[in-house]
Length: 324
Image 1 (cartoon, one colour):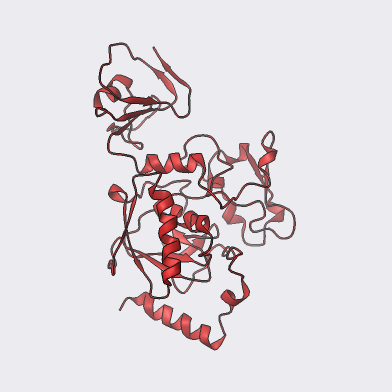
Image 2 (cartoon, helix red, strand yellow; image 1 turned 180 degrees about the vertical axis):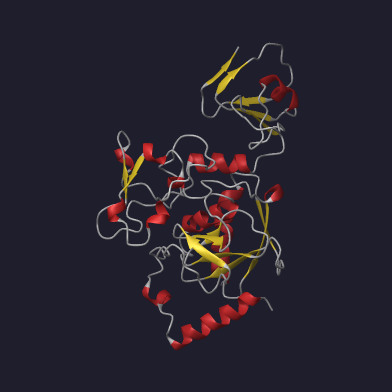
């Protein structure tokens, strides 16, 4: 029996005794409360919580955002159910999985028991939380709001490798963190990650963004949207759809086999045409894109002299591309 299951039995026992009343106090149509920084829930031993719902190993530096390179090979995410997840809730989870599968080369593979290596264990909980990206040993997805498809999508976004949008290194250009309105001891949840990976414009619409009152002391926002984007103030933190950039970034992290990427500003050593290791030269990108594939061109100036006769699609999703 997995060590986790003893913790689950203990939690269930305490619930029967009435000592664990968090579930009873929080209506199912309201999001489970975000957990304090450094919390160590009993049902995910060896992990602590950062940013309200992100699980990280206790001995691991959690500072990397808003996406990780610890991805699932081939986009295959193997998972199992805890016995406490009802058939109805399993259907809700599968529907949320389908949202990500529809926009990226991702497949959630259900198994009766996927062991302890690279396995996602999905369970009923009094919180919503997930690790970010693929972990080596069993990782847990805790869900409280089973009736909210995009709260589930948010946690699955973490599982697939996304952090919170407002952790971006450029976020102070777009939002102001109101430190004096944040609950005592919760300021770390709003850290900016200057060494983070990011792509495209700041996404106020992301399903991975905090809401304006998250971790607030009272009725004043912890996040203020700066001019000229004030219209987003009441809309950040939405949990009813995947934004355009949510879909695009996930599709790049888990790209189709016939996609290739070119980035004139890429400074890495390895150029293999992937999102993380793109080609720098446009012609090289063209020559290495399969017939019928897509070449994604990032902003920059490229030499593109020649005659191109192979059938493919060129996409410049962020614009700013000059071919000469």
